[in-house]
Length: 130
Image 1 (spheres, helix red, strand yellow):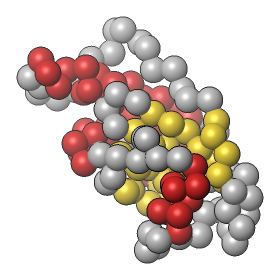
Image 2 (cartoon, helix red, strand yellow):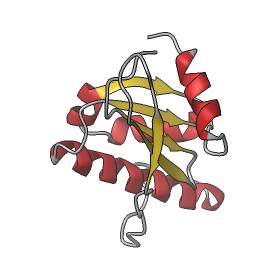
Image 3 (cartoon, helix red, strand yellow):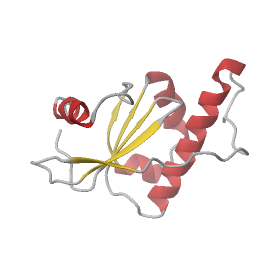
């Protein structure tokens, strides 16, 4: 996968989020880890039907992440996005994303890469078909 310069790679699993950025160019990708967003708004709960108690924290986390991504897109903080999340989180995130986020999304990858090292993530991204 070719990543434009400054592409954001957001990696989440319902409990943890990482933010990486392509500090290189499209042909020489260099991933740099950025400070993860703080998603601690206690007033935000899950959207839609109420999940089981065991999933409540994950649903609330995904809701806060979607709101943060929406705000970043509307404030023009990124032009290109690769969203990586475990299947359950991706399913919760998709319907909550603003059309501006969706328009900037280069790829959605349904995997949990939150524990991978930066080099492993770069290698995995290189294998993703556009």
